[in-house]
Length: 254
Image (cartoon, rainbow, N blue to C red; front, top):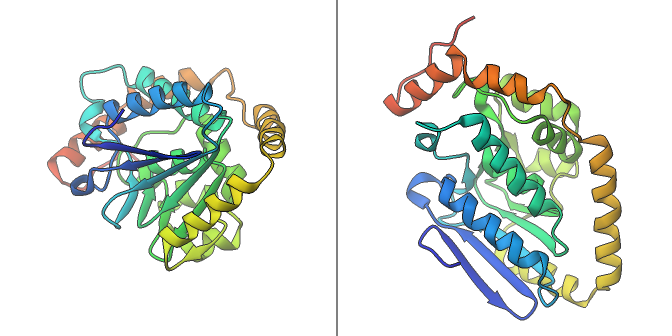
């Protein structure tokens, strides 16, 4: 499971995953998503592991979206569906999952973080989906709904419509993160120690109940695949990818 871009360490009851592409602000590649999916499949049957911690390397980003070049020469809607399946697998893990956030947590990084059970961050953390000013694409409905469940509908609308990033303090104010800390390592160690001492029965039952609630409130509408096909096949996404790769400002249709 260890790779240069997805570093996995294990100790009694705990698995930690570090996204390690600091030169690209830990942007996710298709290979990283596949490796995370494999890990989720493994952990689903792992009764010895109690906690999964996800974090980015370098101190500047948890993960800054997806590697845009991965969108080229592939069925983008199918790619989005594969990411959604990974997020569902992460959300449904029996382990307590923690996103430890430093710096940018945007795009795919925010999708992963909101599908964790708990989030803790440093003061330099920023959260958002600035896609309206970058790629001109759209999120799967279930990802939007999950963000609204964690950050609230008003703040989710602000993220997506204004492309503004949400500060750590605002995220804490709406309960999206459980703390804004100076020493992330110490906070994670303390949090993990507490979880390892907690009743596994209580934790698993709570996760099951909340997953059932999410299934009712966050189910994708039947129209979502057609909507995504239209968006990804349209001129704005093509322009967004072109401009991103050319390091230019996109000129979207009005």
